[in-house]
Length: 91
Image (cartoon, rainbow, N blue to C red; front, side, top):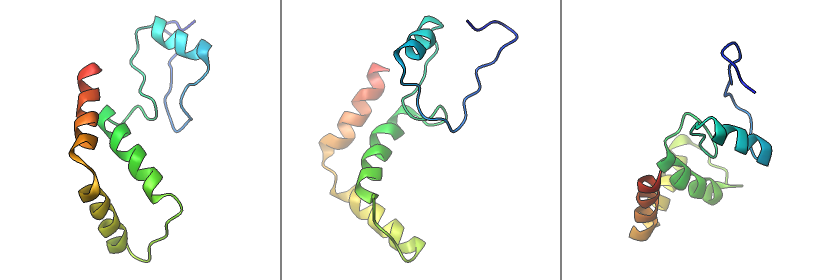
């Protein structure tokens, strides 16, 4: 159990997936995002899908990378963005 002298340090560790850990975080009423404590929840929806799309692709230049990302963003249906915004309301 955490007390005043002990701090929970978030860094680049993987998400807390153990049921015991999730229960303990919930008992303390702490908000704990799924992937990274420094990203707003909307980024989980957007960047998770973008990461899947870019997986395994290689780009020769930063400009090529940016073009691919812009292309992907334009190809998403309106419902994709609506769903991401809708999840913010539930949080």
